[in-house]
Length: 279
Image (cartoon, rainbow, N blue to C red; front, side):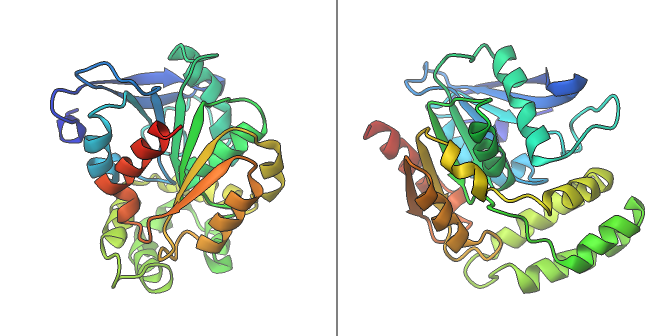
């Protein structure tokens, strides 16, 4: 596999499988800058079904001076499950201590960087005291997953292969209901590509499990430093809920990037550098 397009000039990469909980194997890509980074290493956890292509611009900028471990979580088609394993917010987080141990980052300085589902997993994991990052950087964390009842009913009753037939309808519904095609048309194409590459079986199981999750009762248990990057024009990620999350955390800062596209931009990485360097 060639990941050169995600590297800054001089950055080297390697990829392998890394152990999670209960014998799960997770796909990991390690980006190492040419010059040793002054920043703590970053564990990068993307969104629900999100693919690395969505993060091309961010990774190319970030790997100039951040050492990055891009981790694909267990709901993604790249992960290896020997037996059927849980696909819940908690179970995704349960893999993180194993990953940190294998990367020799336990009791060391590191940054957890998560988007959407990945950000929610980080919040949940911190609240359960199973990870202790130096800093968490969260893009559009989900407070809850408001999956339309009709889609949940289909997920519960229909066999997974039906997904291939209704996928065009899901894309259409997503475009009409949740995305602002005027201010951020690129968001649709990122999500559509993610749907094309998603595992129907894991997508179905995770949707059913995620639908009952809410983060609110977990937030007062978190005392680590958190930077939240939001997009007030992103309908898919409820901005009001993001503001509420920031308000309920004891040590957080929120930056509004306005659009989903800007949360996937060079400008966003510059904001992160500025925030770290200001401390």
